[in-house]
Length: 210
Image: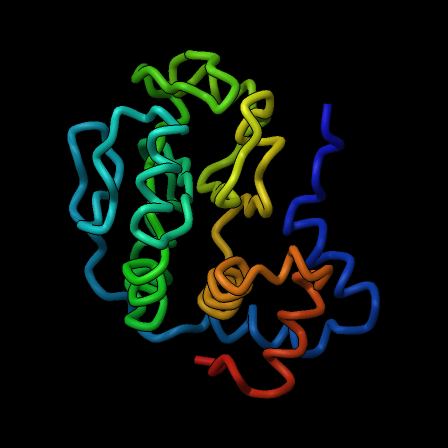
């Protein structure tokens, strides 16, 4: 079994401990004090936000990955749940940002899952379970959680094992934009740590701090 990858929350904490606190803290402060939120995507019958870039699929992950690859996009699983204030904040303040929305539309095939949902999901290792059961299998406890998948996943791995990055929690615009860019650029495959990439982007001004 593959060794679990550190979460981005852990990575960011490590970056702070290495002395990158000033730039990262500034980014997090700016996103916390961001401009008034625009209207979030409408809510569906399950109480989850439904932006029009979400994909309606059978949640068969091998099929979803094949379709994402055919479109030249990356498969992204987005876990949310009804009444999640952090999910609402993510949609209102982060995913609605024009730059981030453009990155998602151009580069990601996004499949939404409900932490308490009963829809059947098929994992890469052919295991089938409800969304709720699959969340437990993958160790998902918080919402929102974003799971980024590589273009190729072995048939004996789960989505959690194959993930190139997992972001638990509602980070702000700066971190989210950097992560979407880093994954698309295969920064993880080149041995580049995300926290180092994020700090460099902040220092260089490549990612606007607003």
